[in-house]
Image (cartoon, rainbow, N blue to C red; front, side, top):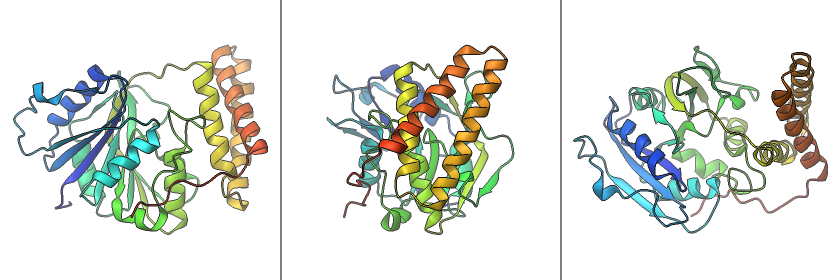
Length: 289
């Protein structure tokens, strides 16, 4: 178990109620040695007024509320990384809640591994689309990098000195609206850092409400990831992705699941479109000195 405090980084925008629920779940954690950094991009300037919030008697918890006039999840996460004074960082989305032992599991594993992915379930404890099962496993190949979901994962800040931080071209709030955590952990894996999927570090998330624009943005993010710094590994990953999406399109079509079929179709179309039309852009993930 780690001795140093964990910094929990929450990036938020216009979700005051949801953020309050997330913070209350942090107040109920069995592990107490942590601080909180809130990076707030809300349109009204405040997603959370913490002066009215009692942190369940855990007065040792410091809440650092940073207001940011910019946009983009990766930008907000990078601000949180820069503001942190801890080597151990955990990122959770603002619209869900943590299991009471979630941070305890991170405290057990963040000193043994360089990055750790938690498990995400729906509020009703059913399977979520980024839930990789009940068995914890080492992330020891490039395929398992996809076990990481940005809504519930952590890493040692020291690895940023070698691989940089999040690429702000990717992530929610941008045209390429996904895969920023995949890109980060893929770079970590290529640089020899060790990862772990911890099924006991559980975070509960609401059912995703998808529209066509979000689906396409997700696919563009995936396509950008595959095309960026493309080489043999990325080509292999893309081929596997195409095979998976085509199979899912056929499978859901046979079962007359029109909505699911269209989701996979739009994701695949956006991925291929982005990969084919990609133009090299300035990479924006270097660690700030």
